[in-house]
Image (tube, rainbow, N blue to C red; front, side):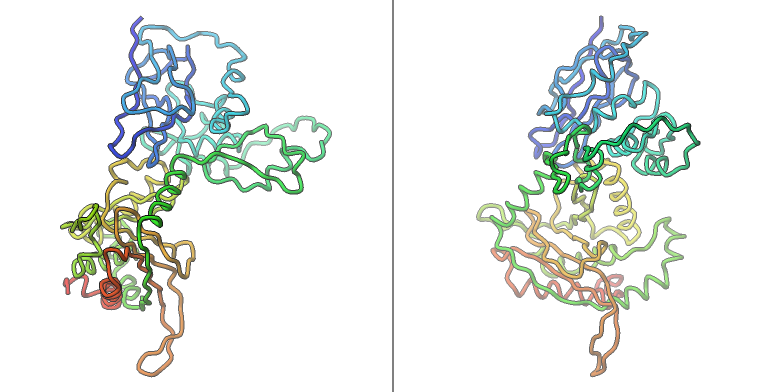
Length: 436
């Protein structure tokens, strides 16, 4: 017997512990080299733990849902053992957790359809979709890294027409069953739900209680911390987006052909923010005890929605990035957020943040500061609105900007003038190119 330890990956200094999600292998099952054995959820990202060598799962030291720390041993693989040749027919039943273990309910239901060694590995969101839609993972071609099945692959497979089958005899309907009640529930993304939960007594007013993910709990903690420790105030302004829209329409085709990425609006907002932060360094500073820390660099956090919740990956040295660099980085962040591939390093740090509620149709909001930063810019939906120019009422594509700031550090003068600097840069985008 040659046992090797499976350990928790090294976590960053800001992450003290993590939670094991669902084991994809049981003791006695074969394991292929680099096959994903389990995902580990931190308050920032989900980490995948691959098998360092091929063999047989010998022992699971830490079970689903347990808290773990860096380098902790969670399982052992026997690299010399041979897998069981005839698995017991009750194995799928054995894999299911008791009903009280809510965090593993969805994964337990997915376990019977888990891919065997050598087959494509499904991401958590994809596995959930395939289980709900009755899609066999072996029939799905993964387009993710290493051939893994992404959420998009699963959705495409679920939408594909299925061959006709002979319908099985339909049992007599049962009144007010859990299956009939469940469709009316709204379940948060990636929040596990007990598949056999009986809501018969709550058919008129159903409820569903699920535990917060570590990310959701961390978001709640940081938002409360921000409001408890910062003197948050928000200043507003409006910007005429016509010059930006005209410039984008003029160059978007050439831009995409030249750089291989679409020219969006976020690159303009990022460059405008850096333009203002250079003029008013307090907006890019932070408080550390009784000290003010002025940052000589511009690391801009971009709030991105993901299946697990809001994440804020960082554009490092945004002042040194071209429009194409910014657009490529944001597109990469979006793809990684959807597939759960953002790293801890990509989510750590930042001196200023931008939140774009406009992609969801928001007209106006007051964004909350992301500690230890001291300011955040909120941008919203651009809509045609009547405005007055030279004494005449005209229609212009307007966007309301909102900047929340820590009044302990930033006075109204710096905040208002900083937002005006962003407005002026967007209304005359040549400033961004000429650094004026």
